[in-house]
Image (cartoon, rainbow, N blue to C red; front, top):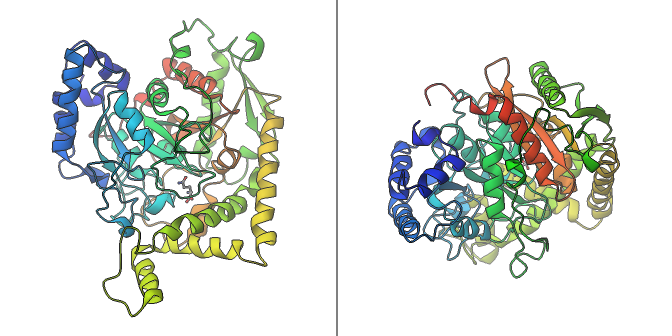
Length: 497
Ligand code: GLN
């Protein structure tokens, strides 16, 4: 099997057995990046990558290898990364060089991973199609006429096209799950606070969360184990819970009906499907793939029950008020003084701010800053922002009620498969509406993932979303892994890859 077809788990084993060197692997993947397929990468620095790989080979030779020593990974360009540019997909940060690494980047380096480069994304992670990047859109490896999803579109396309075995992504309102679904890969957003936000260019701080995107649940478990853990000195919202090894459970013997005792108290795992999520607006091929996947889970011993998330439909207005409010505050730091772009000519200080921000930000970012400033302004704060926060709590409470009836919630990731490039490009509302299934778990801060469950009518991948209760990543990964042990959907790859 070619190296680029191997999973993170397989590559880690080969490296440990010295069947391949880290340098050979890095070279192999760097060769695949020639011509920047799918416009997935925004920066590569082969010398820096190869230097990291050489150090990994030394560690392996000395018997000091970390768990993922020598396995390549690429980072969404939202994570500041020493030695590489960090643009957040924005003109504002063109060629910006960070003097430090994001905590997630540091942790993955400590686990031994080699940085291949930085991945294209929507500007400041705002978007659902990767068409908001100042550096051009990313194409979907399954059909280059189509979008890869967003905002972690470069991450999803790169993993699907075998340009990297794995990638980091960030998910504020769906940006790990939706591009994973659209590109036929597996991705997980952990519980809010599991992974440090230090060094992640901020979009909406109460929602932003990092997670891995790879080709299997097993790989996601390995990567998530390396990424997570408290970071009290650098991220005050990082949870004070010890790092967990998310892959230990996966190693348990599967048995005939592995989910028959995987629920609470040794009961069958109960999968709750929200009544609101089988309804109108869902593309029939998605409903079909989802229904088939759920019956497969039943044949593995799970029970499927109906649950209700009555306030979930309100997630769209709530999310687009809260995220815009937080973005307008977070992005005030880009003022032409502290860092990033500054207009080359201006009349006075105010003019400098206006020109700098006018030139540096794209349309979607400006739209959110304006909405955010509006909903936070005196007179509108109570009517919009405060109301949104109250409904946010109701959405979170709905989940707690649902989790009294099930262990895991399952549903669609998006109402459709990946659409054509340019479709809806001038209709931001259409993009916002397509986030309907991913926003509730984000607003509640719950762990959630997407795994491939087949191809839809146009031959485009369909993802199944799984949502767990707080800190319950393990049951999600376990369920996804059991599913992937008996199905082939996650092994499907785009033609010509
Ligand atoms: N599509 C959503 C938005 O545009 C989610 C983006 C994200 O999760 N970063 O805000």
